[in-house]
Amino acid sequence: MRAVLGVVFLLVPAAAVAQAPRVVITGSLATAEHRVEDRSVGSGVEVSAGTLFGAGVRVNAGSHWTIALSGRSGVLHPGRGATLPRDVAELGLDGAFTMRPWFDLIGGVRVRSYTTMLARQRWTAPYLGAAARVPFAVPGLRGMLDVSVHPFAGVNGLTRPEVAISTGAGVAYARGRLDVQLGYALERYDFARGTTAERFEQLSVLTLQVQMRALGRGP
Image (cartoon, rainbow, N blue to C red; front, top):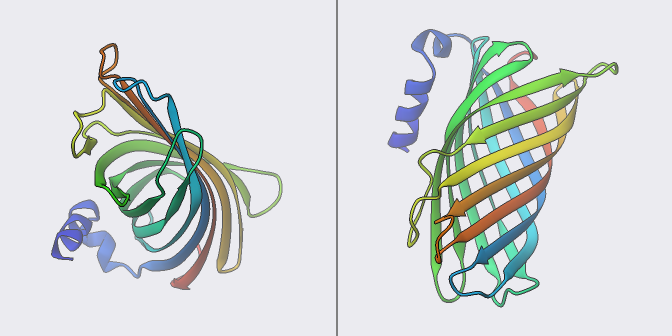
């Protein structure tokens, strides 16, 4: 907890924290598909899919800074090529700085674990990126786009990935204290490309998220 608070104070200047913050509570329901192709064993593509449930809190401090803490978990059931169900648990700390009303610089870290009855794999993926909002003709309706790189992603038991990127797109509608978002996100990780130990992992997630402003005025 102390480490999380330390990151918050590093990301958000004291002048912004001193202003009255806007606090938003989030809840989410997602369907996820995880694909793994490990060419070192020649087993083909393993596919697992399932449902993830999540919750979090977001604080808007000042007119430019946002910090969010979120978590989600669920079970990915084995599909083509896979044999064991995987329990998924993820914790994320995210920050954003609003450069323009429609454009943010984003950064943070995600810690995720995949657990089977045989082993546990933990991922740590700091990221940097950008996010854009595109207003539509209908008041409160907007499109969302984002792209991030994970330059220091790490997985226990594996070398660092040579390619680690994520992209997302979606739509959102805000009315009063509520904001409903439907988004699709794709993460891609390539390990040891061009070698006999070549490995590819991909996680795609379709998420329905509901946000409710619990404190503070609307944007």
